[in-house]
Length: 224
Image (cartoon, rainbow, N blue to C red; front, side, top):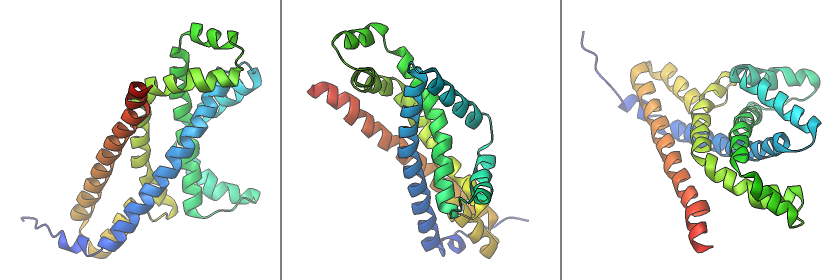
């Protein structure tokens, strides 16, 4: 029997789709911003001279990178309320995605930090700069430039990974797709549309990150 596609049934729920897209983008934006800051902090701790901070950062990275994101999500949403830290599903999703991304960006940025020639760091210290000033002005920006392609790829993976937060009833894009499928019973059409939307968002992110790279590193170098 020949299957007949009916995408019109799916696009009757365009308002819900738009809401799901916006929430997915919001979660991604929050997690990327705070995950990047967390990664910079973690990389600074791992590259620093304080042994205790290095160990804390290493333990954090090892735990997060070697456990499933879904388990981390359930611990935050279902486990923390037992300790008195109750939060809504969207907040729990944003926190979990941030913590998860922070571990990966820590390792990515750390690799960039280690690629900076030691002579540049020693030159900064010899000029009377503190280690924090050296990290901020001499190490961080070159490290971000070196690791930018890997960071951009990780951010796009984070966008795709937001689909997992549907497991705690966050009404992002994938959850919205499941809702529409339950109403229309057009499984193929629904998930083809959802796949296409994820693809478009990923390509949009890639283009946006390319623009950011040119603004931060190419144009900045040309004007300096």
